[in-house]
Structures are given as C-alpha cells and as structure tokens.
Image 1 (cartoon, rainbow, N blue to C red):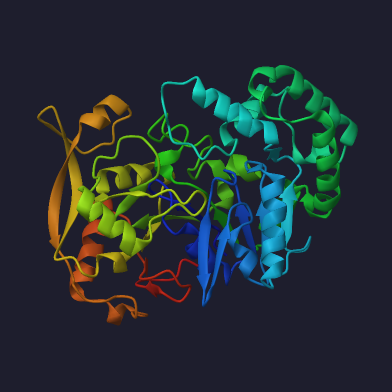
Image 2: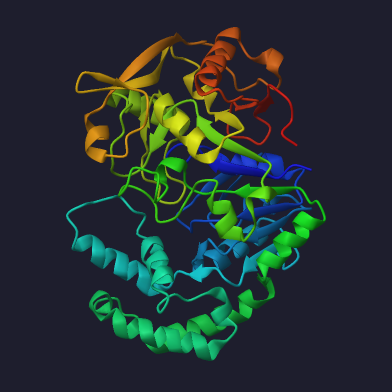
Length: 426
C-alpha cells in the first residue's frame, strides 16, 4: 500500500483539491493536517462546482473517510455551513465519513476582531484573509487562551476559557458587539451538532495504518506560504510542508510513502510579498482571465508569474518531493513563447538557491530560459499520446531541472481532465 501526501509546491492555489479528489477514488482515508477556512479547494464535477474550505476533498467519493486533524483550526460556522451546502447538493456527510479531531483548535468570532485590530496597528500589510487564522494559532501556542473541539464536549471548561479570552482581549473587542451570552448560546448549539463527528483521530489514523488502508494526506495553502520556510512575514500561520503531516495528525514519518507536490505551469500568489517572476500587467491580466485566477475563498485577483524553478526546487528539497503534478498547462495553449526562471541575478551575481531574506528576494532579477509554446488546445487530451511533443519537451525540461518525475498533468478544471504520463503513484 502507498500513503501519499498531496501538497502545494508554490504559493497555494495549485489545484490540490482537484488532485486529491482524483486520487481519492482509490483512497480509504483523506486526512487534512493544517490550515483553516482560509483554504479554498475547488472541484468541478460536470455542471457542479464544489468549493471546500475545511472538509477534505475526499468527501465527494462515497467510500472515503475524511479526517480533519488536530493541526487544523476550525471555524464551526464555516464547517456547519459547508456540511449543509454539501447535503443540499446530494452529498452525504455523516459521522461515518467525516471525523473531526477533538484536539483541533477553534476559530472563535473574537479572533477575527483581534486580527483586524492587529492589522490596524501594523505598518506591514501582509494580505491575510482576515478570518482569524493567525490569532487562533497564537492562542494555541499561548496555551491559556486556546480552545479545542474537545472543550465543547466539556462545556463548563469551555465557558471558563471564554471568560479568560473576553477578559484578556478587551482592546480588540471594544467595537465587535460580541457578548458572553451570545457566545455561550451559539456554541452550546454548535456542540450538539458537532458531537457525532468528534473523534480521537490519532487512534483512528493509527488503526488505518495498522490495517493498511490507503491514505491521502491533504495539505492547504502552499510551501512558499509556510510559516517557517515561506516568504515570511507574507505567509500563512501554519506549516504547509510535508513535516506538518506528522504533527497535524499524530503519525510518524514511517507512515508516509510518497510526497506529491502540485505546481501550476506558471505561478500565482495572492496578497503582498516579493514575487520575482511576476508577469507584466497585460500578460498578467490575460493569464488571470484564461486561468480564472481569483481566490476561491476571498475572490481576490491572483498575481500571475512565469514558472519559478528556483523556488520550485527549494520546495522540492523542503518537502522531499517524490513526484510533481503539473497543472493548468492548457492556460498556455495560445502562447508563442514560454518563459521559465532558472536562476536569479542579485547585485551582479547568479543565485540558484532561494534566499531567506525578503530584502534580497525583492532585489533579485529572474534569469529566464525561453521555451517554444505548443499553440494547440490541450483540454481534450486524455492520454500521453494526445500531448504535443512541444508540451512534452516543456514538461521534460521542468522535470530534468528539478530531478523529480512529473507523472501527472492537468489540462482543465474538470475531474476528467487529468493525463497520466508515467506509473501510477498507487
């Protein structure tokens, strides 16, 4: 059996949800290990589009159990709305196919107010989603302030933690209109609804490993947004890299067999921060419109850039990528030439490693290799034989530079628009 991590190898929005959905056809368990409802995984099934923020993408497969691990921070309002929305579209969501860790921390309404208050007092605008993700992780590390899913099932303890937080966050809560009674009433109802799903997911995951279930570990955001290894402070508040699978689900590294990095044929990022290969405005707008590059969670326009192989090799090293899925190749169908960044120039020197300093990165100029475009539509391709040689050459160039195989490509948003070029990862 093979247990596979699927994660973003860029700045997020690489079509991880679609890949997870495709792999989930043969998976027994899909487990999400970090992030919150700042994630947006879009899956297109025929004429239906599903945007999932918290529930793992395997929920659209009938025989898959979906796990929200302890490393995830959960906004219960979002989660319950997501459950209701799926059921309205005919997708069954029950305690049999959705398990929520009792150790996962809760995003509370006051966390959004804290984030807004912090942003008003900061001169650095990092472009967060303003969903309270950062303050929730901060409270988790504080230890006194963090509230876990399991606390809802011990409601006296929950109320004491609410009192502590309301007393210590008075500055941020002044204009929020949040009252203790409203919180207690609302979360008492949430507790009743969520109770059937709450599970000791560590025990569940180890039972799945012991019985040789096929497991997909689903990441959110992307490597370059990792709190430790991304373009700090223009990052998210969790670890998006492969190491977070262990801490976010309570399993050891031996439980991971393969790490599949998902990368677009180009690069996008949302919000502020350095972006060396950002395209000129006209091309940026063209690619954004063809690729529908707007945030699934916020609808913010994504900045578009040429494929950055320096950053992608860095992501490969950090995650130990064993394979790459290259997505959105069809967006380049009409281009005559395609640029690929193979190095940076910094103060006259050539760099092939990704710098940790933002100041250095901001001053880096990309060095490009120009590759020919294929100028043929790829959207109908379903096998390797359908892929033009020029496209295959582009894929080979990327694979050779990274020294990582690319056995899977995507040529459109639908579940069926996947082409397998090599052996199955299962």
